[in-house]
Length: 57
View 1 (cartoon, one colour):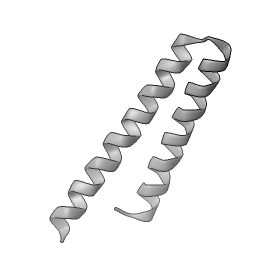
View 2 (view 1 turned 90 degrees about the vertical axis):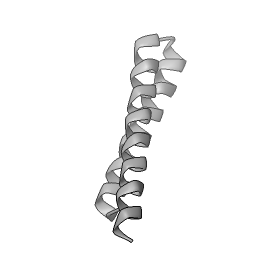
View 3 (view 1 turned 90 degrees about the horizontal axis):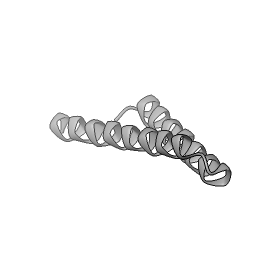
View 4 (view 1 turned 135 degrees about the horizontal axis):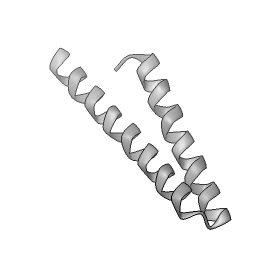
């Protein structure tokens, strides 16, 4: 996984965590769900990058 992709995925995961925590604090279920979705997307991207890296080796 390239360092740029790794940083981008980490930033996306962090953004999702912030949205989820903000949604928790404000009782905003839509924001909580959006944060969880952002985190899931980042996790899937990281998994995909790891698979690509495994085939490169």
